[in-house]
Image (cartoon, rainbow, N blue to C red):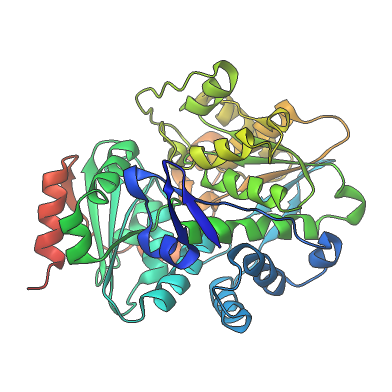
Amino acid sequence: MNLVNLKDEQQQVSFTDAVKTGLGRNQGVFFPTDLRKLDNIDALLELPFAERSTEILAHLIGDELPKDTLAEMVTRAFNFSVKLEKVDSKNYCLELFHGPTLAFKDFGGRFMAECVGLFNQGERVTILTATSGDTGAAVAHAFYNKPNVDVVILYPEGKISLAQQKLFTTLGGNIHCYAVNGSFDDCQALVKQAFLDDELKSKLGLNSANSINISRLVAQVCYYFEALAQLPKAERDNVHISVPSGNFGNVCAAMIGSVIGLPIKKLSATTNQNDTVPRFVTSGNWDPKATLESLSNAMDVSKPNNWPRVQSMIDSDKFDKHDFYSRSISEQVTASVMQDIANLGYIAEPHTAIAYEGLKLDQDDNSTGIFLATAHPAKFKESVEEVLNQQISMPDVLQSALDKACLAQPLEADYKQLKAAMFETLLVS
């Protein structure tokens, strides 16, 4: 797999090097130079999830990994279910929250852990990542107690749900967490600064587990194929997928799936009130505003790192821009849609509701819709119960985490403070 840095086309790397490097020169993200179509999609959709995912990843990655090794990695990483639930007469919800941390990030986090373990071969590595909610838990659990790996997680203090936070701030051991006095974009900016610091990179073996890491991105492609595999065959010809979007890695994976042959006709990247991309799609003007807090906090992102990847597929005509939609859904509408979906007999947290509303606004009469549920409703228990005025049950894994003490340390949104804290905690003389 040959990948190019989208900000510096002179930097071209293999999949292995892209995984180990994380972010390219000039803070550029890596992207494949060639996305070839898969053969015989219908036959592929008949395979079991893990076997099909191995074929998809082998197609994307190429011959860098032996097929049997890749199959073992996939089997270990994707050891939980994906469910497609019918919600109304023509729309389905793809539930991606059945993994160990009850969010879609488990797919990418666990596959990345498999890749890092294989590629680093005992060398010390420090995973540095920012989270707006679910990445932190998925990455922390995927790498927890892995030998020769430390994980540093930055999150915006008070701006993610308590359940999200406790899933990763209570682990300790090789998981080091910092509550940043700022927004997710501030956390993300600190991560980017760290990757420009040669001293930090060389002494700590720095890598990132955000969706900028290509291993996470390719893993996410697999569940879009599973979505169509679970659809009745008669409904696969005109599929419209709506993805709740913050950092735009998830919708990027859907677009990659379409480019390599998955029959997705239309794609909606639906945001909350942080509407940089919807405004850009309408006006052509890239103008990020200050990040706003919302019910759907995992999407409180004004400067999405993965947008250059999406833009590259649109600019190169790999994906038709006329089949790509992006809308912003207000807080008031989000709450109203949560109630509407509950009236259909389905409980949705705010991110899922936003995806459903985006789908309904853009969907044509003849299409089958799939909207994504990226997290279990209980991860947003307080807001879901307040909006719906009903109690929801708490899964054991969440209740156990909530009962534990938070081990995170406070941190200002200041790079010097972050670097000093990391050296003090991690540097071995």
